[in-house]
Image (cartoon, rainbow, N blue to C red; front, side, top):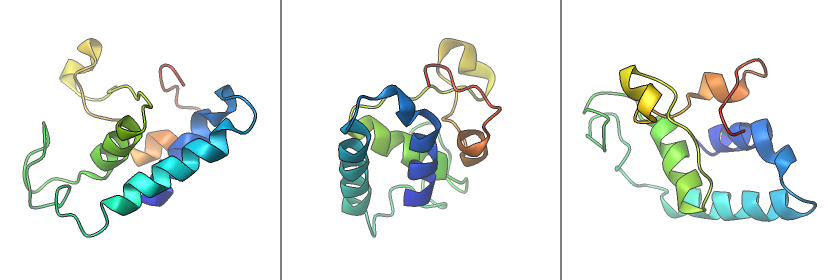
Length: 103
């Protein structure tokens, strides 16, 4: 999942000042590693708006970025117009043609 986080950051790190992206990446990796072994985002568990027996990799990325103060929109699902949808997917993060609001 750390790869997904880094892919997401590469989508928008150009907005940060010189030196800031590397420091932020280190914070992100540190927070992600702190959850190593956690079952909080496991397929079989419910977490937030994600039901049990669903993939939560995009929620993990969203949660870790939030822990280090990086806002990401929730552009997917019926409630996305209220920013109450689900987080950006891995495919959206790596798609250079997909516009992630605020990134």
